[in-house]
Amino acid sequence: MSILEIERHDAVMLIRMNRPERLNALGTELRAGLADAWCEFRDSDSLEVAIFTGTGRAFCAGEDMKESVERGTAGSGSAPGARKENPYDLGTLEKPVIVAINGFAMGGGFMLVERADLRVAVRGAVFESSEAKRWLLGGYDHGLKGGLAHAVATELAYAFRFTAERLHEVGFLNRLVDSDDLLPTAREMAAHLLTLPPASRVNTTVMMRAMRPRPSEELQQLAARLQEHGAKEDLMESRRAFAEKRPARFKGWNKAEDRSHTPKLEQK
Image 1 (tube, rainbow, N blue to C red):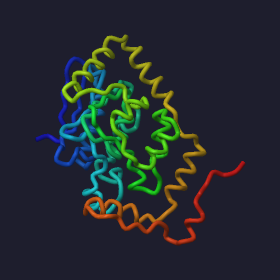
Image 2 (image 1 turned 90 degrees about the vertical axis):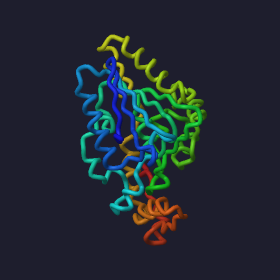
Image 3 (image 1 turned 180 degrees about the horizontal axis):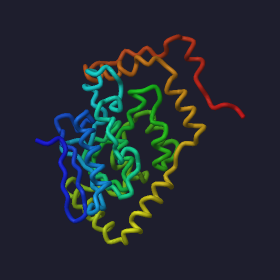
Image 4 (image 1 turned 90 degrees about the horizontal axis):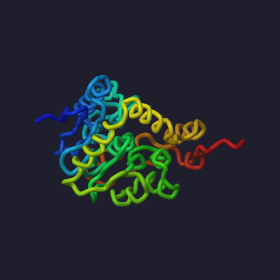
């Protein structure tokens, strides 16, 4: 059984993660396969629209915690497969991507959803921006990039779970469908895109991505400081606790006084 299934038909490339026993977690092999698939899509002269989905009860559970624990380093980005160029992750594609969310989209899986141009999800799918559970700073930028109200963005940053119904209500998802209609709906959206003049489709894709909100340089600098504020060993403790199915035993800070020296925006 292939860990990644690819179909090519009528200028549409369907990329399906196929690791259902691990909830399509982003292990080394899957990451490498995705990088190759997205490079093929980028370089093809015949493929114009991509549909991105998963098999089983999850779209993608994000980082493969078991692999991280075995490697002894936090984050899928430290895996060998992450070293391959992936134009989808880098945001350098000039062709539209429709994500068809068949189930759980957690952590890195949520980020895969976020990068797509159009999003269709099954009713009952569950979403989580997991950084607050796994790192020293929650997912502060997802709500901004998604154009969400600050209260909703804050809830997302704290790693609260969201249903597909809620994210559709707040405008993060384009379509909400029954499971049998997931791929047919995504294919209908792809067919519409293919009716557009080719230059219009490419130019509109580039323009809409350029208009996505981003944190200011000042906020990114603050985030970088906050990501270093705390006991780094808590990163692996979070992953070990998850893999061992037990409550985490966090340290918090290396020195008690560090808690009183949280980085903040510089006053002007």
